Amino acid sequence: MSTAHPPTQVTLFVYYKLPVTEHAQWLGRVRDFQQAVVQAWPGMTVELMQRPEASPEGMETWMEVYRHPQGVSPEMMASVAALAQAHGLPPKRAAELFVPLH
Image (spheres, rainbow, N blue to C red):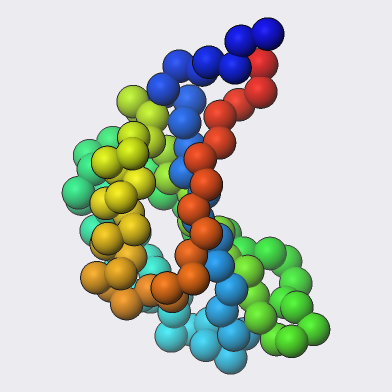
């Protein structure tokens, strides 16, 4: 069975944890950052999600989702990471690429 997929189906998921008490201060910062990503990569769509419940330690898990008509390339992935650092986002960000199952 082939595992090759057309590049247009590559989606980037980035997730990290933040204290519930800092929700409001991070929300605007992440949205500003995502706007910078959209400006840097025309056609890029972004989503910001969170798990419905916080951990017992008071941490929320946030998920950023990035899609592009030509697929998310390694250059785009590196750009997202660099822009996140430039915007002062949390350094512990796990980034993974996924493709649809066929």
